[in-house]
Each structure stands twice: as C-alpha cells, then as structure tokens.
Image (cartoon, rainbow, N blue to C red; front, side):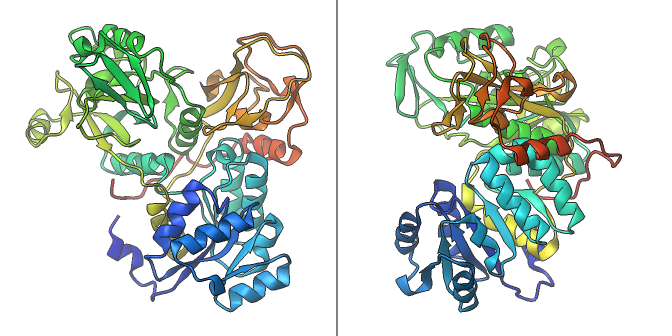
Amino acid sequence: MNVHHLFADSGGRPVSYALSGAAGGFARTLLAQTRRIPRLTPAVLCDLDVERLRALCLDLGWSAESLVACGDAPSVAEAVAAGRVALVDDPALLGAAEWDILVEATGNPADGYRMARAALTAGRHVAMVSKEVDSVAGLHLARLAADHGVVYTTADGDQPANLIGLVTWAETLGLDIVAVGKSSEYDLVLDPAAGTVTMLDTTVPAPGLAGLLDLGDDVRGTLAARAEQVAALPTGATADYCEMAVVATNTGFRPDAELLHYPVARIAELADIYALREDGGVLARPGAVDVFLALRLPGEASFAGGVFVVVRTGDPETWRTLEGKGHVLSRDGRYAAIYLPYHLMGVETPMTLLSAVLHGRPSGGTDPRRSAVLAGRTTADLAAGTVLTMGGHHHDLAGVQAVLLRDEDAPAGVAPLYLAAGARLTRDVPAGTLLALDDIEGHDAELTAAWTAGAAPTTEPHRTTEAVRP
C-alpha cells in the first residue's frame, strides 16, 4: 500500500478512535504508536480497570490533566470535546462522544459483539481485534456495516489482517495460490549440541531432531518423525484455529484437515511442504489454510508469527530468476512460498484506522462468506451441567479442543466454539464429541442471533480484491 496515496486528498483530516480492552497488551502497542502519529488520537478508552488504564496512559506519556475518568455520558462528551481522553469502565459510555472508529480488543465474545454492533448501527467504523467475536459474529457485523455505509475490518498487525492482505495482493497479481497460513506464536529453537528444543521458556529433549533438519525424499515421513521429537511441547493453540477461521471467512480458503497440519518446518521448506500430495507435499487439495511450527537454530532469524502464501510458479524462467534472488521455491520448481516474517500488533493498526476512515477501505478489501466453522470437540467425558469456562492466554475452553471444519463438512446445528464459552452442558457428552447447539444452554442470546443471521445465504459474489502491498 502506497502511504502517500493513502493520505492523498484527505486534507490532513485527523482521525479519532475509541478502544475497548484498553489496558490489554494489544491496546498498549496501539496507544504507544499513536503517540507518534499526530493526526491519530484516542477519544474514549474503555477497560474494566480504569486505574490500571490510567497508569498505562501515564507510562506512555499522557499527562494526568489530559486523562479524565468519566462515569456518565455528559462527562464523556465534555472531556472529548475539550480535547482530553475519556477513561470509562462501562461500554455503554463509548458512544457518548464523537469519534470515527472503534478498535474492539476485549477478547470477550458477547461484550465485544455488542460494542461493535452499537458502533456500526450508529454509523461508525469498526476494526475488530477480538478474533473470538469475529469467529462467531463477523459475518453479521460485516453485513451491518454494509447496511450502514461504514467499514468493518480486521486490524493490521494482527495475523488475520496481515494474511488477508497478503492473499488479496497475490490474487490481484493473478498468482495461483495453493495454500495460505501463518506460523504458530512461538518458534521451535533447536540446540543440536545439547539435543534439545525450546519453545518460549520450555525446553525438552529432542535427541533425534538434529538428524532431521533435511526433508529428504519422503517429506511426510520426515515431518512425522519431527513431530515425534517435539511431542512434549504444545501444538494447536486455540488462538491459531480462531485466527484461521477469520482468514477462511474473508478469503474462501478452507482447512485441509480439522486439526490442521501443523508441520514442523524450516522457512526454506514451505514450498515443498505445502505442495499437493501427488507432488510430495501434505495437501489433499488446493485452497488450504494452515499453520506451521517454525523450526530454527539459535541465531537464525525468527518467522515472528508471520504469514505466507504458497503458489504454483508458472513460467519457469521467471521463477529461476527469482530463485536466484533468494526466493523460496520447491525443489522441483513447481511451487514458491512468499511470506511476511512479522506481525507487529498495534504498531501496524494505525494503517487500518486511517485507511478505513479516510478512504472507506478495509484491510484486504474483503467480502466475507462462511467458508469454515471454528468448533470444538470434547477431550474428556463431560457431565451435564459442566460450565465450559474460557481462560488462559489463548482463551481455551476447558475440556474442549478447538477444530476448524470446512463449511460443507460442518453438521447442521454445530456450536461455534466461542458461543459455547461460558455455556453449560445440557447432557452428558462423551470425549471426542463435536459440540452442538443442542448440547449447551445459557449461551448469549444476542450472540446466538448474530451467528444465525450470519449463516443466512446471500446472492452477492464471494469476494472482491483491491491492490495492496504485501
């Protein structure tokens, strides 16, 4: 995306935003970057812990005089009109002042949905960071936005938006995409001398992994052997499945397997691994969305939770030239991997906010359709009355494994994972059961209605594309 073009003819118009979940990690990165962009300002910041939020803002350089804790609508409106930042703990107060776009970052499916709905129906744009909301209500919210002439979009800096943008770029160029995806949140770092592998702060023995650094002729066999070596480390984070559900909705790419492939892969191998099975890769069919575990040695650059597309190459001479410049091609030259080794969280999100408000453009130029369903399978026998609590860094559901189903494979009445969050089981559910709506009670009625509305058919084309930079 050409930044000068983005700002052209905007007349220096300032952009203001409201932010929910404003004391969280993503929010901090956005607020910190906002300090560097004079034309972008926060208007209303909402968090349940206002004192923590105030401390965060002071730490980032806002003066005490510029921050006003507000308990009612008139004080919110007055503070913002005076050029100060209103701090609130009640989401109902978000709309009391003038601002252009809501950044929803609570991670709470029901509350986040209601805040986004209120903004859209009031004619304000929404940048959705809470993938938990998007995986259940994203289609309905996108249609609400269209009905009210505003933008509903994923947020640059989060992996879904970055991948959607990369896919849009590749489609605009006419590239023949076979697979799209991202790396998991943390790399696998192999220490060959010690015979160990480390993920974040956990190190486990992996004595045979050093001998598996080359894919060899049997790609799937090597990947299976690597998986055995790292089996003691966690794979398949709920957040990964949720993010890929959002990508599937916005691109039409679908999971190749409900637990995804999660190959342990080096960056230079992506084009070989994400080839079709008849060409030695892992894919049963083209058009896949997936996640890999990035394997590297100490001192090698990280994939940093980045995103990729794998394409068929086409003209051999073009791609021999590109291979000579260091681009990743499969060993047979038929596939190539194109990737962005980063996602910078809220540091990138200002691009989304400015683009949505100044030009009415979402990240990636998408037209969403239900292509996959984020659902859940029980991992143990669960008794009637069990509450499916959501918790942890990745917002896991206790006793439930996230799965990603192709829309055509999802049975009628399947429960979206984050609609089940906090619900109670209506019956005893054996291990391995795909949760259905009939299995749960006490789930949020408004979120349920949004899920149902999103499933309603539409006759419009699947998606549009517009050129963006990768």
